[in-house]
Length: 199
Image (tube, rainbow, N blue to C red; front, side, top):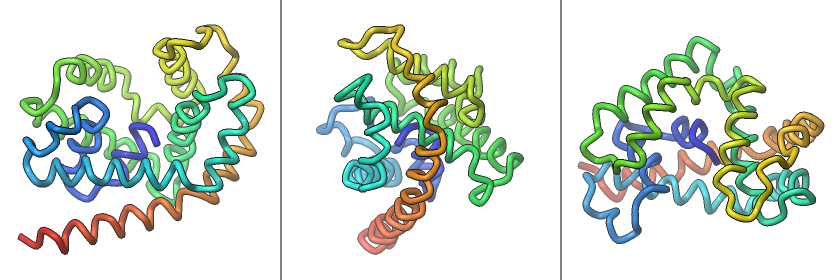
């Protein structure tokens, strides 16, 4: 899952911070953060593990794998944020906007925990409102290009966005078969975290 899905699948402000930090910290550093942030890191990992094993996401990877091979999972993660952002059963458009603003506020209020490379990215994320604009084709195109630019062994001009557009219906079906299961799983993981840490 990508940034929007991870930020949506949280149950506290601290978890928002942890969900975003997970990809930017070393494993041994996770215990240096407050408990709620640690819970967000744990939740992020549980989400990724569940996502990697889900049959619907295996089908989604087949859309991209002929073009990008082992990088297909990264592009599926980005694509799923498009469908999350357009899922009005989760939030109205106004609520998605409010969600995005809340995430930026929480991250900015917790800058003391953020590494410098994440702080630089956060400035761009907030300025261009990545989270809300994942609902737009151009927003996903921008994110896909970001993945291409960072991928060491991929041509930066590969038509990955065209593949996304041509296969929206297939990817939408994969999302429909996947996200309710992921939401239930995230709620279950959070319930266990609360049982383990009742105070």
